[in-house]
Length: 363
Ligand SMILES: [Zn+2]
Image: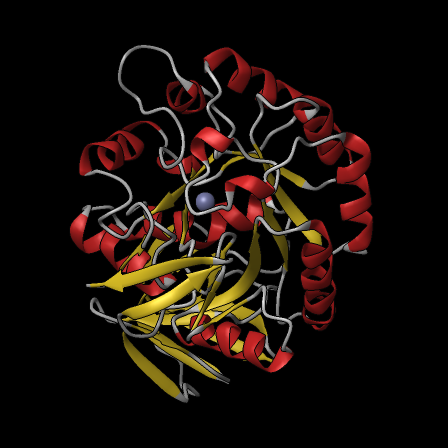
């Protein structure tokens, strides 16, 4: 099938009046101008499908569910909002429970419906636990981390670790040596410890400035990761998690390393009301999820569509950088060769953005 579009972001460049030839789900050829055999014509901008590396669920359900049918609902909810490459994040749980959750997700990774599993916990700081059950947090002793990874049979793609915990740096170095992304976050680390984690191989910061010391009052984890030139910074761009001045700093100093994530809890794509995150009660009001116990933010109700549109329409980010942050950077960091941009040879994961909403194209 050949489609034409008024605009498209192609390999990091915005182009006008392009055609794309799609064959068997792959991008076969891209050219300029009209095309005599065009079957569909789009008046907005074509962009690559979103890659979400941090998401707990949606449509009312969690990826931690042991019922595959409900996991499929969560995947489809985000797919309809443009996420064509989905990682499934699991919050802190008892180790046996966590292993059961991992095993339930393995078939989804094998089939390609999920790109991989992200363990956000249990190796987090009690002082910065957010919506993770503090009594279940543990130190990341290498042998235990290795046994969890083994349980995933190659499907665990990222593990978030607070680098100040005993065994953290060894675990980060080992994960990096295995091609698994070590992320740092939910951490009380100072700047030097954050630096040591980066030197050990950490590649991602879990939800930058949430659940860590802020960028005020001298050197901190947040300032250290901002100053680095390589590490990628997850951003929950829902207008609540991260203040506008932090987004301004990211735009100025780290736009090429920013990765938009949803960190969505089960209410994403759903309604306000009472929910659970792990075993903890959450209330969603005006789309903001907070723990009932202490009012702490408990994940977002974002879809990638909202995060992307906020980035453009509220934060004033240009579409090329917004595409980089919502697709290209994550694909690059996770070594995904066939997604992350509209390029010849890649999957035809293409979205149409009309300035207000996203439509997932099916061919
Ligand atoms: Zn978190």
